[in-house]
Amino acid sequence: MRVFRLQTDSGEKLLGRLVHAENIASVYRNLGISETPKMTADEVFQAVWKRKEVVSLVRGWQLRSALIMGNQRLEITGIRQEAEVMWLKAVGCMTEMINWKLRVFIPVNGNSVRIIEKIRQLA
Image 1 (tube, helix red, strand yellow):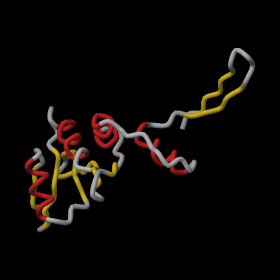
Image 2 (cartoon, helix red, strand yellow; image 1 turned 180 degrees about the vertical axis):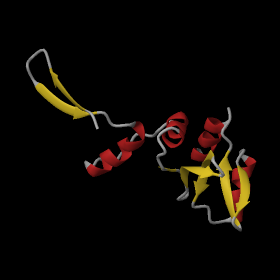
Image 3 (cartoon, one colour; image 1 turned 90 degrees about the vertical axis):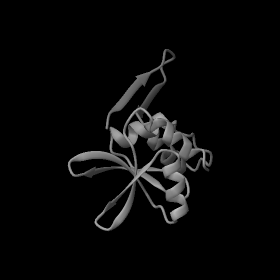
């Protein structure tokens, strides 16, 4: 964590720290602010892919980074119904059976952000 100390031209001293976009919602909640800003689809992708954050989507789903056979992938967890799987496949996701469990992934290519945006519009 990096702390910043600033002093305004009028002499007021300020203390703060950088908060990543994916953490803003929890900061707002902790401060008792009910309306939280929304992350863009690209911010969601960067948070999960680069910083290995887990991001809540819609319907209780979560997007997380998963290491499968040495390859980093974007996995959607929390899917409970077959109809949800079919809808996700229709918007560009892919499925794979791993250890007798069906898992859903967003392909990591030029369409990843577009797929994330479509999923978020489901809300």
